[in-house]
Length: 150
Image 1: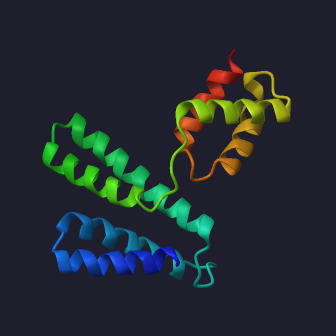
Image 2: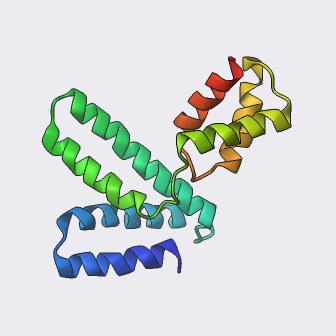
């Protein structure tokens, strides 16, 4: 079942249950899928990797907004963003824990023979490709930087 079908099924359930929190997030996902499918050059299709990337983008946008609302002392808006993040993350693959992520990035560094911070670009390119959907880019970048500086 594609992401769009899952969203539509859950959207119907949320409407019947009158779950405003879930409806808000599901509608945002559906709108993003439609925009991605109708974008120039997409061919009217969205691949699995594109779906994951789209969901990660939505989560990142909401986390950025959440951070802003928290610094501006707007708990009402921050709560809405947190609720949407929780719903969107249900559709993402499970995130790697710090230990597993560190181990995997160490393997990538060893495979590439990287030894200094100047190799960070090469390591990041490989790591983000291999770990797509399992960890966000900011976390991967921080871990790569930490491991290359040792």
